[in-house]
Image 1 (tube, helix red, strand yellow):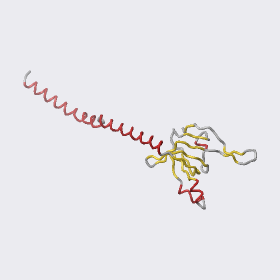
Image 2 (cartoon, rainbow, N blue to C red):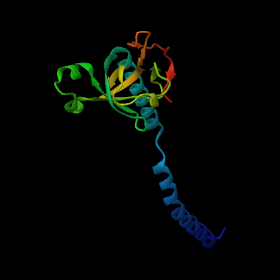
Image 3 (cartoon, helix red, strand yellow):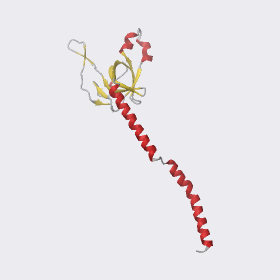
Image 4 (cartoon, rainbow, N blue to C red):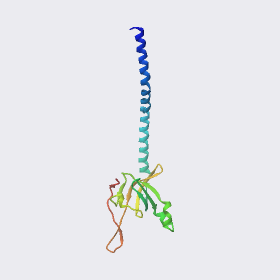
Length: 164
């Protein structure tokens, strides 16, 4: 090959390299290295494991009156019966209500759907606290029914309906 042709070929390759280099750099900067993906996956597994441990070890229950419920953001505010009984006026107790978060795994007992609950209803919540959030595992509602003597009597239903 003549030196002139070799020089032209080399110049063409350099020009091509300059055109492609920014694209290759951009593609590589968007890719997440394998080590980071592995680390992120391990962190997610650890969080899931910690939450399962919290659910098993830190579970509690509370009975009280629903002050508000929002199915869109999956939050139920509850005023525990201890707080209601200790107040002279129940009108001023709204500030003491605690928020509890429910998920699609939350079990419902005594109702078919969350739409059956309303502010003023009394429920028992099984929950655990994880990362400063109270997470509900079960909502139990015993709707009063009247018996033969026209006195309220708790109605029992079987558990197992999931929040949807």
